[in-house]
Image (cartoon, rainbow, N blue to C red; front, side, top):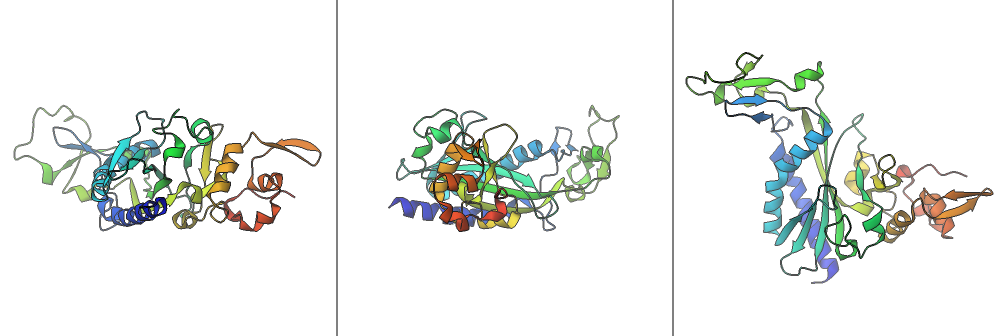
Length: 302
């Protein structure tokens, strides 16, 4: 099987997989099926909608399905050895261990119903030195493809932020006589009939998968850290309609390898190149301006 065939098959399988995930994580009304965590006394503690907490629990929630996906499609999974390493998941073909796919799990919530966004990994050491293994599971150039599995959701509005973290007793989980040793018996506990009565902190999921380069912007994703930012329009994320989607992966690679380090003279001043327009001009390829998906790019300066 050729490299292109491996890529085609992996992408097709991933798309089919994410189409099934929504049913796995959602109730029939669109709420998250995770309601909280339970202790040995059958108290349900609801969780906060803090993005870091939600992201981690979502990853744990879907991980059994990811394992099933890998087994079904004849891949083994290698997890990142350290928390800050790239990628989250490495899929290695059982038929040919030279075929490796990097998949990062990215979760974010909607802003104004249409906008989301996240970082797509570093454009630093491992991205530039592609035969090295610093902060990456395998050298970057050993991967057949690099993908983002995105999860977009809506946060539930609570009148009181503290109401996100309540304690519930659920009648359908009660033992016949209860447990008099329960250490939280003197704290405020709300009794409900069933788990569905507890409001989930997030709802209305959308899942998508895309090659990383197809959803990238030409801006960094966060502050002073060397992270590639995604485009922010939700439809563009789902359709893989990023800044480089018409230019191609090679331009994405070259731009981000040189981001903030390449310089040019513009209007008599030496500037660092931090937008796609200056980069194409620097490369003598202003003829490619019309292939830039300008919607997600930095505003062009004349």
